[in-house]
Length: 199
Image (tube, rainbow, N blue to C red; front, side, top):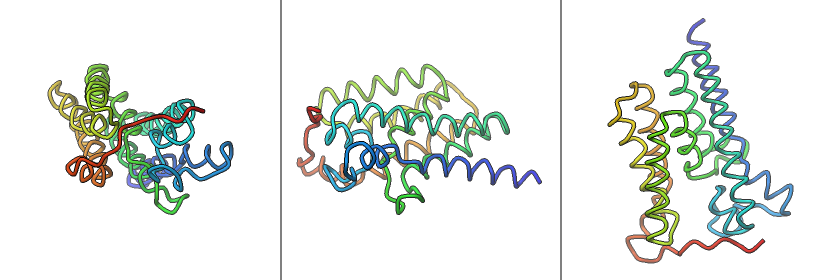
């Protein structure tokens, strides 16, 4: 019976993670599919690039909320282990949503949600890493990669529980993997600067 609870937590996390705020918002309110515009990514950055800051921030908040709800459900059932299971599942759902042909976001918003479930120090340093690097480079992807390194690093340094550390590492690694095309463009010097649409 216990194993069924673990499966249920994972399934809930994955299904919640598979709810793509950007695709829903772009189709229902913007009259298009964000995956067919801009970078083709179903995430907050591309939403801001294509539809403006408001759309990007709504997407970011919605994606963070769905992952947070999943992890809170997991926490209520299994504590930190539940946060880990639900969090990993939510990240996978966000990146590979079953409702949208397994083509989702790059995991940055879910990484932010994971940081919020860790400790305020993880949030502050992760956010600072993102803002500083993105500001200096004028590109979002280097900031996202900096946060992907900072979140698990700080989680390890302040000595949080093993399940939380596993989740932080997984979320960070997924962000890096999902940014592999961006990394190639950064190396080649062809990664575009970020500019939100004026809408």
